[in-house]
Each structure stands twice: as C-alpha cells, then as structure tokens.
Amino acid sequence: MRIGICDDRQEARELIAEKIKRLYPTEKIVCYSSGTALLDEATLPDLLFLDIRMPKPDGMATAKQLRERSRNLILIFITALPEYVFEAFDVGAFHYLVKPFSDEKFAQVLSSARRQYHENAASSALVKEPLSICTHGQHITVNPDDIVYAEVFNRKITIHTLDSDIEYYGKMKELAERVGDGFFRPHRAYLVNFAYVRRYDGTTISLKRGEALMAKQNYAEFVRCYLKYNQRRKPDILIMRR
Image (tube, rainbow, N blue to C red; front, top):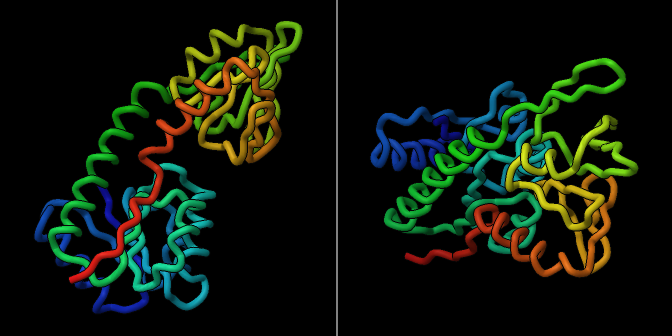
C-alpha cells in the first residue's frame, strides 16, 4: 500500500509522515510538495492525505483532476478550512479532518482508511475480471470499471464507456451477472454503473455520459443499493478540537 502526503509546507508533510510511520512502520510513504507534482506522477498512491490551501492548483482542484484518473483513490483532506467540506462530497472524500486534531483521531481515520483499501482490493479481485465481447467479428476486451451504462434493444446490447460505444448480441441478465454488484438494473433495458451516477429521480438517471430510464417499481431498491454503495465514499465530516 502506498500512502501519499500532498502539502506545500515541508513541516506539515514531515509531521503527517511521522504519525504514519509510528502507526504503520512498514507502509511506503510518498510526499508531494504541490498538486502539480502529484498530478505529474504516472502511478498514484492508494491513499492520499491532501491539504486544500496550496498554490494553484489548490487541493480541491487537484482532487477533481485525481478523480478523473482514479475512482478508487482513498482521499483524506487535512485542512484548517471547514468551509470546503461540502465540496468534498463532489470528489468522494473518505474523510475531512479540520486542524487541529488529536493523534487518537488521526489513528482512527487512518485505520478506517486502510481497512477500506483492503476491502476494496478484495472486492475488485472478485468482480473486476475483464469482459471479452465479440462484435462485428472482432473480440474486444472491456474493463467493467470503464462501463458507464449499457442498454438493450432487440437483443442487441450497447455498452457505453466514457469514449466509445460497443454493440453486440447478448442478454442483459448475463452482463449484469458478469460485472458484479457495483451495477444496477433500474429498468429492464438498462444497466448502470453506480460510479458514474450524477443525479436521479423516479424516472431518469443522469450519468457522467448519457441517461438511463428508471422503472417506478425499481426506484426504492435503486436508492437503497446506491446509498449502500456510497457509504464508503462519503466524507466523514468532523471538526476536531484539542
């Protein structure tokens, strides 16, 4: 597991690194002095402590770009600015720590984040096997994480990713079983990836790309499953005092 610390102040980076080493001496720690240095990395950390008040790009702008590259990065903001807490929802922060905070609270948050990382890794190993799709005489490999949604019409399934549409003949039920529980069928003709849901109501789901229909009888179950999916992605909002 790689733990990143991004803060423009060296003393702040060293302080957080010391706390981590004291708790988990074998974990690899990588430090970044700016959002630009972090974004230039080819390989992102698995867990990131990110300051908000930094020279451009600040922590929130950096987080938004990071989310374009990785939905699984566990993000923990460490800041003296509680007013940004609502923006943390938009980037799926795991926790939002407001300075000053105690060593006990830091240890609790880090422990929870590590546990979430290992749960995510175990879940990914079970349901993220690439799909082999035969379309127009060619075999194409599709990563389930890249699927925004799928729709079916007259036995022809169209898989929509962020940058392409793939058509093939098949059954939506079989596709749903193959991609795992990060997806939901809100309507018999649609299968959506929870990771790309932006808005929803009783008739329509708006996704990062495109829309899917919602069957009235499936709405309550969709909400239940979506909230359960998001439990681990909501920021844990807590202003800490000494």
